[in-house]
Amino acid sequence: MEFTQSLKQFLATVSWDTIISSSLRILLIAALLWAVMRFVKLLLERLERRLLRTELGEPPTEAHKRAETIVRLLRQGALIMLWLTGILMILRELGVEIGPVLASAGIAGLAIGFGAQNLVRDVISGFFLIIENQVRVGDVAIVNGTGGLVEAVNFRTLILRDLSGVV
Image (cartoon, rainbow, N blue to C red):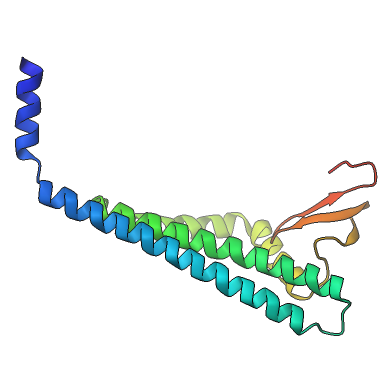
């Protein structure tokens, strides 16, 4: 009896107009996020086709590996950026103040940047490694004495598989 009375009091204080309008805005944000991700995917597919058409004197397999590597990295970066933006927008709709979250993220990013200079240096080196077309997925490479087939290239890591199948 007491629980039902408390529930009735709680439901009487709820602003249903606010809940419905916030829910609709969140659904709109999710739909817009999905549409932008589809658009980015189409743009990246178009970029990949264009990169394949403008091969820089490379064999077709090399041009394909380079285009695939660049597009995959751009897709990762774009998806991370879009998801973070969408999550922040949804948090704002739920009533979470995102100003302090963004300020904290900026300060944390600065502190991590100073503390993780090796990581930042590795990411920048990886970026130029990819842009300068030095290593691509499908290449055979030797890194620090370990050789193998390049299975994945990220901004910071290369994943190699040797002849015996060890990653």
